[in-house]
Length: 97
Image (tube, rainbow, N blue to C red; front, top):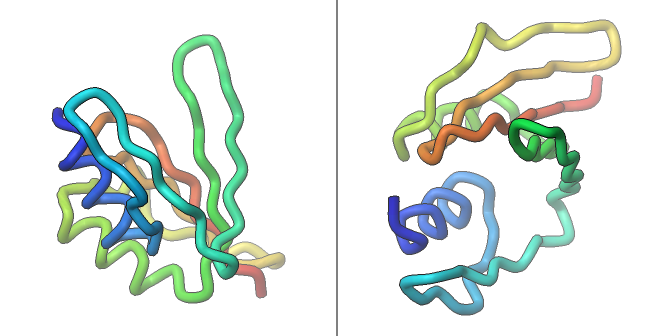
């Protein structure tokens, strides 16, 4: 997968601004309304985002090639979803109640 494709996925799907994108790397800017957390595990990184509308975010990401790992869960504290993005990593989405 190219960095251009990943940058497009993150900018169109999650609202990041692409500051620079080359063949080797991309610099993305997190918008103030998007709360991102990165957790590194032995096997892969997990990015977790707080979003304002989980359904529209999932729809946008799926249109860009992502797959919903399981149905959106409706928990007492809010909605949560796990989305496998185009490079195989998992994105966690959270919409507070």
